[in-house]
Image (tube, rainbow, N blue to C red; front, side, top):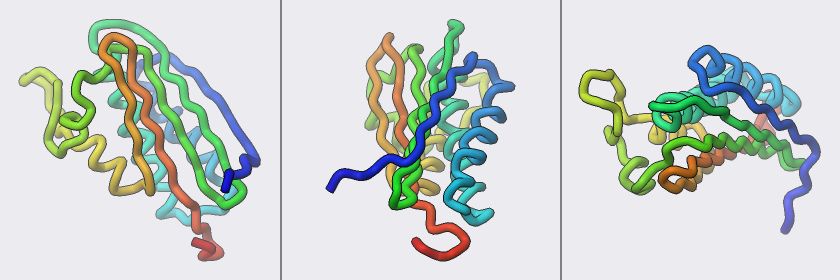
Amino acid sequence: MKKIMINECKVRFRAISRNESFSRSTAAAFAMQCDPTASEIAEIKTAVSEAVTNAIVHGYRDSAGDVEMIMRLYEDSTLYIQIRDRGAGIGDVHAAMQPMFTTAPADEERSGLGFTVMESFMDKVRVRSAEGRGTTVTLEKKIGGKSGAR
């Protein structure tokens, strides 16, 4: 059965670290339409933060660019968030999604847990990527909300 979308928002911003907090706040504000619990909002903000940080830090390590975030809300209270960069891309998505995997240089402190964190807070996480063409991370979460409809 096809899901019925009831709202959509598209945002594009420069891939700079100060926009990570902007992306979290934007996703939280959009999700408020479902009357989420404080815990659900925290989970959404954390997952978005991880995805956007990956785009900024890994996607555009040696270049400048933009991050695009598309948010959709479906009538069953499913929140869909797609975060896309047109940066370096990931050579091996399966390996990148394993805990502790990182492509960061040894002198940078990166835990390699970004995808693991996203998966722990969202119902679905999908990653598509091609080297030199960028990465798209799709997050989905059904919002139970304060009414406990979940």
